[in-house]
Amino acid sequence: MRTLFFCARDVRDYVRDESDVQSSLFERMKIYRDRDSALTAPIVGETGIEGLRLDFNFGLRLDVPAGDFRVVISDGDSGQIFFDENISDVRLISVEKHFIRWQVDVFRGGMKIFSHKLNLEGRRVLIACRLTGMGDIISLLAYLRAFRDFHRCRLTIHLREYMREFAAHLYPDLPQTDALTFDSYATYYPLMTLGNYPAVPLDIRNEPMERAHRKIFGLNVLPRRATFKPTSPPVTDEPYVCIGVQASTTIKGWLYPNGWDIVVDYLRRLGYRVFCIDKHATETNDGRTITMPAAAENFTGDYTIMHRANMLAHAEFFVGLSSGLAWLAHAVDCPVVMVCGFSQDWFEFHTPYRVANRLVCNGCLNDVRVNFVWNVCPYHHGTERELECQKKISPRQVINAVEQLIIDRGLTPPVLKNFA
Image (cartoon, rainbow, N blue to C red; front, side):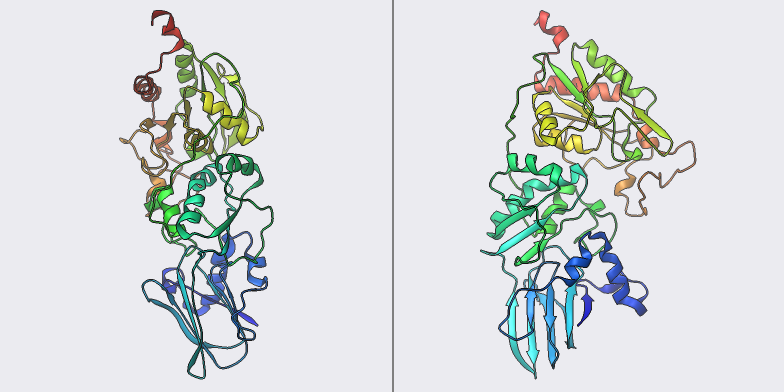
């Protein structure tokens, strides 16, 4: 049985050389770590017709036995036809893996012998979140429960091991599994990819991350975020602020000379203890070394997400980058001062304390004209303007945001408490 791929959208959106469409579509699925096993795993959905099997465990998967079969695949909502061909002895697989209300009709000898529209209600569904970035995963969590409630399915989730305890604490009603199998009615693989790929129904550079999740899961609702309840007491009775100076890539770092040292000195003058909670105190990428500010207290290390969540939940606020720690702070309702100029203000979660210099080159992550490559400044690489979006955010701008946060939140810095 040979494998045949099809696209719900026009294949020319993805494949320029149509002489080898199948090979090109296969290559575009390499972003899925479980691609090969998903392509060959048995399809268990019986149709009542010998050899004809259907499931939705890697997009749409349909085994068509040898014979005179015509298969029509369409959108169950709009009626748009994606595929209409006579095929025999074929495994048909969609390139799209996000939610589409597939309509499958099979004909033999000109007569319709099978018809099925995807319906998740009451069905076993798996969401296999194979994302690696902490921020990507945390941004997704609220949408898992919303997906279950909206589609009224029996949902199980598969997460990276380091995220499971935190997710279980926030959403104890979402069962988790260690195994990634292909025996559910449907499986969805949320991805965050930059560019125009069939893996997701949009170029995520055009949309806020959280809106992208809605489109991936077929949702029209804004999910209600869970409330984090700390599981351990504060590490100190004194007021403290957490900072995170490291990020997954250099382009996310705040690169103003000694900027972090200036801000930490300011926070300490306010009487706050300042805890650096990065995984590593020092990191070097692309010749740039970023080190924990000397005046910050070293709470770096390979701690669990729950440990970090508890520290952030008890903190006055967090000062950091567009990073997983910022998303974690947001998830536990710790106010976030986000220092970031390489993306637009609307891309990550909303915080009134976003700090960027919009008078220099900025926001390239969300510029669809750019073939974005991590750690490479797309417009000014190799020039004195390289990464100016992250270099020309001044400490004064960050301090202004901190001062506004203190006012808005009604906080009293420790140094002023004797005068309160």
